[in-house]
Length: 137
Image (cartoon, rainbow, N blue to C red):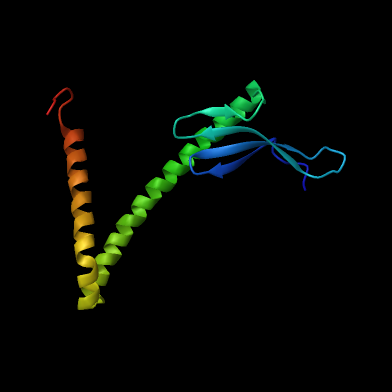
């Protein structure tokens, strides 16, 4: 392995990550990973692993990773929405040009319900944005 290993490694999990301290400077010259913390990016919790006490440097590094991870996930989330717009357009083209009557019958109800739900949500959120501040409905 290269000498430019990071000090900490983050094993990504559904809600955050397990944080490991990397050590390649040992007698066997093999990479060792010691778990030092678990982080939850949804609620911001940083929980030390076992009896390990996190140093200020480790906390700073972990918080920086959490900020970067949250930004990455937000970016992915936004990209998925843009992909959904493309998929809706492709679905309309498919329904108009290539779908058989049987295929349309199989998906029409599910698509209409999902689009109705989406439209209702978007209209409600737009109304909330456009409503004068302090106007309770």
